[in-house]
Amino acid sequence: MLDAKAIVTIDGPSGAGKSTISRGLAAKLHFTYLDTGAMYRAVGLALERQGIDLADTASLKRCLDEIELTLAPNGDDDVRVLLNGEDVSQAIRTPEMGMVASRVSADPLVREKLTALQRQLGEKGGIVAEGRDMGTVVFPKAASKFFLNASAEERARRRCKQLAEKGQIVDFQEILDQISKRDYDDSRRQLAPLKPADDAIIVDSSSMGPEAVIEFMLASIAKSAR
Ligand code: DC
Image (cartoon, rainbow, N blue to C red; front, side, top):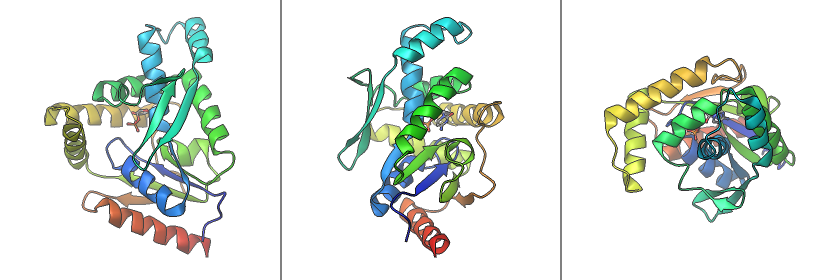
């Protein structure tokens, strides 16, 4: 089976089910789950709260230097995200913060800070890293790479259901528009754009439940480790 120090990457567009699948796969492998989208969301929240203009590089640098991010496991459920000691796990999980994260993630200084932090967190291995550029930029030597996709409509439907479960009632069309805009922006930006690594296995989860996707990934990992 897989080396305990291995790194597995799962990239893909928003709402493809990366979080559920990465968390589930990490549990099966006894690995740590690394949610890099949460890191971009937390940085977006910090910059927005301080009213930082990305074009003002001096203020941006100062603000980034002051940001301390901690990802703490929260039982079996989610990851707790601490921004300078404050639990922002709820505050970052809104569709608006997804848009803010997407905007700030195109900035080179933001990416530089988070890429370094992600590599540091992955140093000891034994992680399932989820994001947009895990297999292409952050962990190009990962043992197993996946690119998880699903149709935009299916992703919007799942996102609406997920938010409704948390008590956030949202409009389907609005979520679909936001997902399409994020797909467009994330895949067309200059730095670390959303795209599958050349050696990634592409999985379309439009008509597959999370358990089936996890089983498929475990089988591919086992096959490649033989
Ligand atoms: O996965 P998510 O929806 O929480 O990510 C929010 C945004 O953060 C996403 O639209 C783009 C950005 N992001 C990124 O640029 N690189 C990553 N590795 C993870 C997220």
